[in-house]
Amino acid sequence: MIRHMIFWDLADPNMDRSELAAFLKSTFDPMVGAVPGLRCAHIGFDQGMGTHDVGLCCDLDSLEALAAYQDYPPMWPSRVGPRNTSKSAAAWIWRCRNEQSA
Image (cartoon, rainbow, N blue to C red; front, top):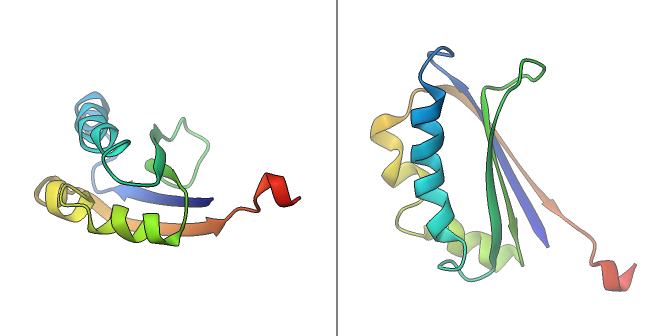
């Protein structure tokens, strides 16, 4: 399994997060099931204790699934780009050990 996480700092941390959350949910929820190997996608906002304003966590079956996810047409750069209010971003990818081989 691959865990892909990306975090953004918003240019305006006081922006309407409910509108942004609805937009991100409508962007990523349909990808689960449509992108082969994408198990789940979760959006979260900082609750006052983190270093970033918003985060996305996706679990995928493999690196090939990650590549398919990143090439999927409604992916972040193509759908969110014009609305992007991010001033910075950070991304991580983890390869998780298969529980059956542990």
